[in-house]
Amino acid sequence: FMVDHVGEWDLVVCNSDNLSNSFRHGSGDNKYDMSVTAREMQLVFRHKPGGRAVFMAEATVAPLGRPPLQPPKYWSPEAQQGQVGHKILPGTAEELAWIQEVMDKTFKHKATRDRSAEDALADRFVVVSCLRSEQPTLWDAFATRRQAVMQARRGMEFVEPKTMQCQGLADRCRHATLGNPANQAYLLHGTNPTSAVAILGRDFSVNLAGSSVGTMFGPGVYLAESSTKADEYARDDVGGEYDGLYAVLVCRTVLGRSFVTEQSGNFADKVTSGEYDHVLGDREKAVGTFREFVLFHEESIYPEYAA
Image 1 (tube, rainbow, N blue to C red):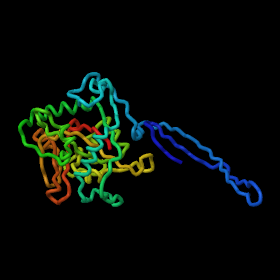
Image 2: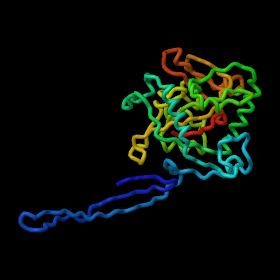
Image 3: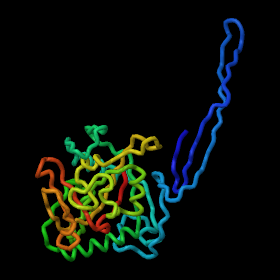
Image 4: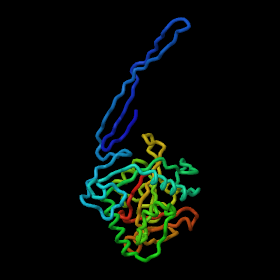
């Protein structure tokens, strides 16, 4: 049998063999046997409040009802006006190429203890498809946070993630005349396909930080600049339609001022106090592994692509 989940409904598909028989046809040299199996299929639907949605299932999101602050020009007109709650669209060929470029340029043949024993490090990560999210309510909160950080950090020098080596995505983060005064950047978050699309619609939750992999630098949202590090957290939907496919979220973030540390510890108060805008855990400098960017304001992250 097979079990799948559609929103709050469980779907159980059960196959059972009712009858199996063999028949002999023809005679002499033309004689042959043919087996026939009669199969019965049962579909069972079970309501389960709070059940998870399947990959590609969009949760119902109420429209913002007004234009979000400074929406991207490449959004659909109805999203730019805030007339839809959430739209998920196939990424363009150019966007897919940008994400593949990020995966290639930030790849590092290095494993840490966060990589599970059964998931050997691949030689390359191949992006087979991508989806773009247009969620006006989340974008409005993100743009408001971006504006506040821009005003507070104007003129400062920032730490730039390695993901900005992709010129196409870097250009998305820069204003034609202002440059990048809030230190916007795209960063990566590995997950499974089902969770990826769910996060596109509702954003990350700082309250759930560390529920699966711990919190080395404090209870925040951990984003990676390296595709290898993001892959350590990526999972597939075992046994489902996307069995064997792993997911990564490509998130636009407001980084602002970095609190840089090589040591583990809870540094959340460095950010929540307003002194800094994120924690940069530099384990690359300390032990040769990776840098991680830890955000403690959900509004600082806009999950834009699932790939």
